[in-house]
Image (cartoon, rainbow, N blue to C red; front, side, top):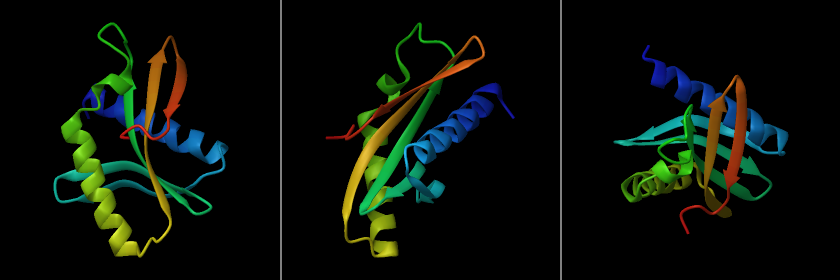
Length: 117
């Protein structure tokens, strides 16, 4: 597996761990619908969070959250719509970005709530 794929998987695992620590229940990871994918879907009470995880080992070219494009956000929203209808979710939803920076054997997590607003 390519190094960037490994880095991404590590970041997604760290994001799920972080969300669990914050009291969320992870209901799905790598949820796919057509060409769209949601990295982490988590629930806390009557709130469903659809999170895009971006992981970087070097921030010389920008912070991880800066790499979530408009197109990617639209794809995440499309997959979320499918998930909501497929599972009959009738409560609140939110779209977040979880930015993971990995440098010097340390991980830093930045949770950006309502990132697509």
